[in-house]
Length: 274
Image 1 (cartoon, one colour):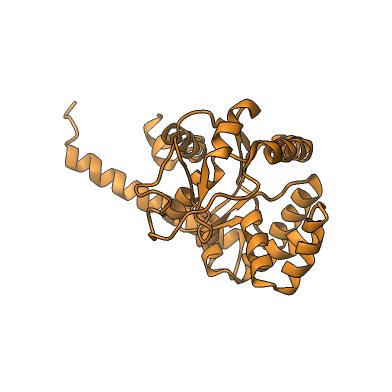
Image 2 (cartoon, rainbow, N blue to C red):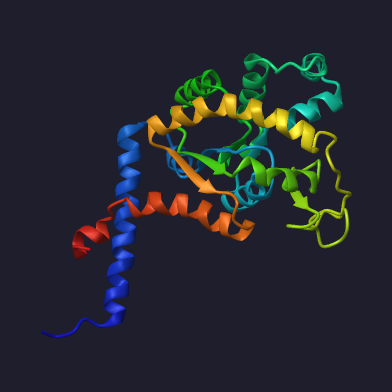
């Protein structure tokens, strides 16, 4: 049998890739007639990132945002911003938070809905950080996406023992505008108390102390355990060991997206039998 030349194989692969793209385009047209934006919507990332305070969401989410060109919506940062700007929502939220209460589902859901509809970055998809915190919020998010003919793709939980979080939290430094986080020992900025990207000052949040952390962890576990169960039932949940150093956590996060690709049977695999 005459061996096939490498350039012939490459040409065949290129042809197969073009055929796959064309098949996908035709499938989208059949499923969504009259829509020209479905292919871009279906290729965008839609995920939530769960984890207790100090698990590393503030370190990993900005990297995901950059990689996928999407928006990162951290509800805690969004609420603090609204309070600082003294918007009507911010004033209402501040009254509740000053009394030690939790901001209502309606306020949080309304804030997320407004961002998804009005924030241009969210056209490339979204990473939700700190939302949903309850099963009711998860159900409302599903309904919100269904209205847009979309589905949540990934629900990733950064898992870490509570005992490891005290040292992480008490040394945490934050860039308020972006949400980027650093640590005095484990992930220090290049220059002391200065954001690596903008050169702006970093802060240490007033509630980043051991006593406040214990209270926040109790609330987190009470609220989040049912949410994790909700997404485990849908099959999109994935747990990641967040006690690893940030580089390993990042590789594990990328593996979540690679898994989805590996399970997809391509036209090339059908032809080659591999």
